[in-house]
Length: 419
Image 1 (cartoon, rainbow, N blue to C red):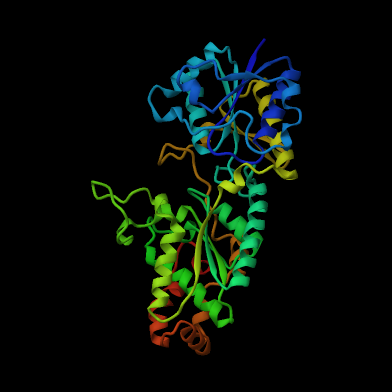
Image 2: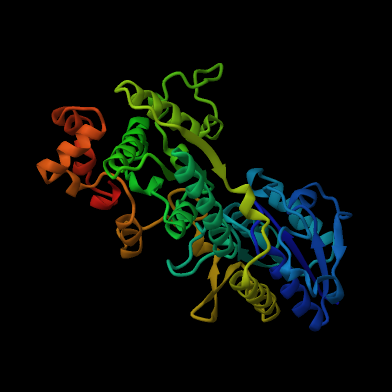
């Protein structure tokens, strides 16, 4: 009897259990033994063969409704050490595994590709999973979990928007997305948030913190011209990854003078403090609350789309392996199975899995930008508009243009759509 092993790496995402169920059921229907490996690669890397469970159809037939992962998950990454992938391959061999399905994001995909290289006797398929939606797929193909996360995030942001209107305050909401701004943009667009700021707007390698302060302060001023003292600004977590440490001022540094992990800076809090201080200098008082959003989304029960999408991915991952396929990410495109070889997923510049970023030149992005309240080039075209904005910011017109005019002049990357 041949054996299929299934594991989950990286962060949770709605739909994981649907993948596990469909993959396991199809394998059992073809006479395979199915092993679920707990905690991703963690125990396999240690040579431990005891943290596995045999999966029968009766164990998984109804789990597709559930959030989380019945096999749990971890960020243990065998690709980080020279012998990690080899040890995983040897443990799989000790378990008698012939086929492996790895469910995860970019790190899990890279690790799966290394395991495939380490042992030719096991066939490997990767199922793309991340609410960040940043794996190298065609632009119209989402990763499972993303749709459910956007839908739930939209409801949470709607509640914050109601709170902001009721109490006349601003929320700066940082949304998960280590590299790309898909989730922040998806949630912000669906909720109709005041504005969403993502790292892809800034084509330069690093972002000056003052640039972010100006975008947010400019949005607050523009809202004031509309008689509104409240709003919700969505911030992509990826902004913190690109912040220029030289612009962080008194940020905590380690013994070598390096800025500590930028994620520890709490992006929303840092920006809140800078924006409040800047406005206060001009005798404008504004209440800003900084919050993070992400963990609330990851283990939600999947919606109908993600259930069916995930079941399809799990089913075809098993069929792909049974038909002799290996070393590829399983995708469904235009309703058909399209395996993407691991080799095509690697960025030759970094040697890592390519990241799919938001295309800020696309009509889809420009549509979302059109509904955002933020300073744009047309705000600087009419003298009366400039005068109104300057009054709302307690500035002279010359001061306003000197401070914010460069937002209209920014070029490259997202072009006019970024301001």
